[in-house]
Image 1 (tube, rainbow, N blue to C red):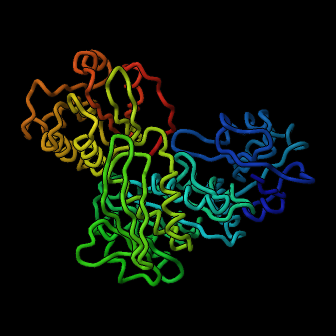
Image 2 (image 1 turned 45 degrees about the horizontal axis):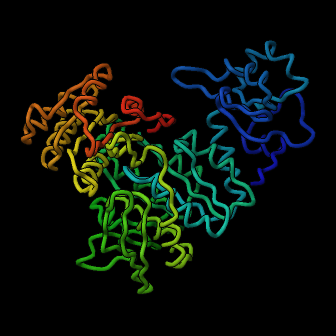
Length: 482
């Protein structure tokens, strides 16, 4: 993939900054970095400040590691220019009011250079899976820029957009938010032409207060597109279905089509041990196609319908949509099916909130490959604010009502999960409570037998990949998800 050639004039205009130090004669930089640990030679380093660190303290380290220059605050440059003096004959400094704002401004400026479809995807659950499905479909037509890892917030999204090049034919940008005001910022930077909100659920309630707050903040994506874009609307979600009366250009989808057909729907859904099959219906054209997703779980069908709607909005026929969905590859630690010592693991530990845990329990309860017990190992769900106790109790209750045979509760809310499970009728002997990992291996060794199915589910901060070595498997690395 060809990378964009950045001149110093581009950087100064995009960052709205002033130049100090050496003036580069040709390409000013090859890429961008905010972290000296991952910085590459010829990158431009942005000295971002946060609650725990100040990037200006790492400028010298970045220069020594081979960056071409640094974006710094004017006040920091004046305070530290003598310390940086030795590099001013070989490197350049772009002085700005605030480096984070400069990063965002540069990304917006760069995005405006490209007249390509840009899809913005948000939602409480499924946005990463929907993004990957969409990227696989659109990738069959040409190069696609997509969000990698957890680069989906006010810092990661600009860094993603700065990878846009002339070779890209489309872009699919994940938009992750946790506080009010963030969606407006992300939309202003990315300027999406198509938007998908996968669903509204109880996630990030610490910053968004309640479901209405989640719906209001995520709904700003659709507000942005009301008149000059295309909205992809999940008609199964009560917080989203009314948007059909409020936006000009739309594609709708849903699983529940008894009252009226949506633009896309699915039926004959079968979740097998490692796949999910269904018939995809496009009601505008009257066409249908068979799809086999390479991952189990009925909840993935809704994500597939959202991806199909995006593709159809871009003129892709249903045959190519079905092919792309069938070729989609699930990401690490999202509904991974693993095997060890005759035990089947459903490893879904990238993130967790009440809705995604309920979906995982559905999958565990319905999983066909079972000759033994169905066991749920559940860690804490983070960022639920004042609803944390109630949410964990309700999930514990749901473990029992799903007919799960045993619960292993792990973390700060382990006892709350256990209380809910007891209230639902799960016996004391079927419940194991662990505040931390110290005695977890003993529980697993004594409680698991060949033929059992074990679900491992919890928020990213629980780092449940640490369970895998206890079962004789290797950890799979992850960044810090939200």
